[in-house]
Amino acid sequence: MSLIISDLSKRYGEVAVFSGVSMSVARGEFVAIVGESGVGKSTLLNCMAGLDHWNSGSVTLDGLDLGGLSDNQSARLRREKTGFVFQAFHVLPHLDVAQNVALPLLLLGQPDDVRVQAMLEAVGLAGLGLRLPQQLSGGQLQRVAIARALVHRPSLLLADEPTGNLDPATATKVMDVLIAQTREHSASLVLVTHSEAAATRADRVLQLSSTGCVERAQSIASR
Image (cartoon, rainbow, N blue to C red; front, side, top):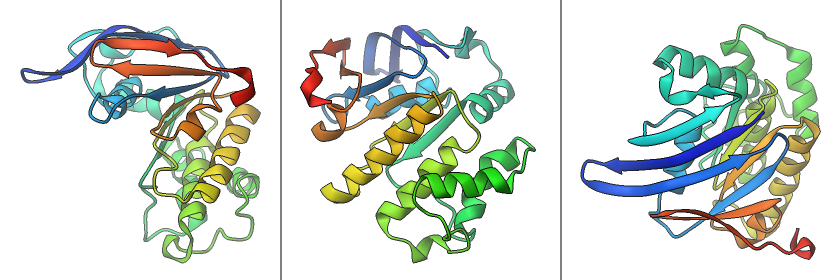
């Protein structure tokens, strides 16, 4: 898997969000993106997933130019190659934990209860598959979201402030699970975060501004 972004610019009407953003993510690499509020970090993540359109530049995933895909092709690519973890969890309240985790497989027409149970065990939720989301803690809900994002074995995992609603101790545990699972599945991980503790665990940290994206110095001891 390779993700390459070249000279990307995004604006809403006459309002520029960012411009001149270029970056790449190699297979199995963990990249954190940091920056001030309102600079477009979540928008950039949405562009990587083909969820948002941009005004100029390109986003290429595994050699495919996302800007040249139809809506149906883009949706199919997301289902097959991309996983998304949100700050607000986005689990469906009327489905139990196992059903929530199984959704990506069902969308691909590949139901696999064994894989679902294995993912629940991997994220520390073994035996909780029949519980409803409202019966879980915030940290447990985020683990459900991680399991759901990885169950179809995507090559690229995108995480948007996944620890933002969690206390520091729980946030650390969730990051432990997120990193361990992406490493185990050889997925690339792009994390948008305001958390310095989370960012310093990345292989590389990129600082996003309105005029581009630059790599920040990262000490080995901080990872």
